[in-house]
Image (cartoon, rainbow, N blue to C red; front, side, top):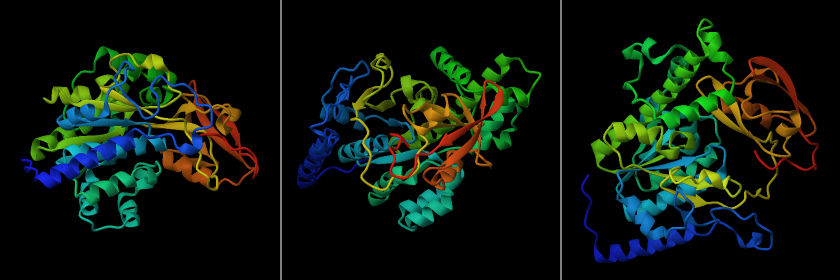
Length: 411
């Protein structure tokens, strides 16, 4: 889509908006925190840095990014500051290039008509969440994503559903891509072979998680076959989203800003690798950088740029029950991606890689299932969990603190 020439006044206003946006991107630590000792981070809060951790000037960086065909904004799904950063970065790019579209991992392709009605202003937030069945389809707090969706609607920016049905990825992980008839592939093509680094990373991920479900689907298979199918499923997932991004770029000419999980974009593997195979080799990858993240991960290739975040802070509002885990949705359900120190989950003995199967008698297939159970949990009560670890099921009990007791630091 050809861009319209700027009028002089519009140009002045846009420059001012860019400066305001960049200023906002530079301020993440509130005055109320100033007296508190802060952990020294490898990327200071409010600073843009390159993939090796060297600070870069924000305005020249954003100007370069605004000219890219695709910018992918990674996230950890359950971290509020990651989504705030995504919104501010989206606003900065929009101030420099208003001809953009937003692609979202959160919704499958069949829900594109709902997104179109949302952007056109034909739905309330409640109607949108109901029509998308958000809690079941995605499961993470919609309040993380609604500001981005509101921004897109305010500016009438196309919002594109990048994902496919979770069942397609699950079938691939269990049986392999070749077993799925072409008519049931939702239009997804054959993925490009993964890089060796991505293959190794996915193999390590599967080793940390439990392989027993993949094995039980085809018990005669050797362990290497389960690994192969897992990697293949991830490739199909990446390819599906890359194809939608590439299609949007090709048909609209807009800069496509992708909102998706960090695992799909880090080190230019996953979606960027598939985009390169589709002819878009210059997609940019941006990541938020948590204050406590290991500096060794700044290896020179993890992203085109990263943005430093301050330590997480709790809002001064009534506390909801918190388990204290990062949940990783996958083809076969949810696994524990990380356990917060000092949390209810840590006290219960949950570990990274545990697959949560049942919570208080309720099967857990998506993050929303577990969140719904935890929200019903009263202070001072116990929550029985059935997990799978090292191929065997076992019970753990999460003991929530009584009202007025200290709460765990993470949701």
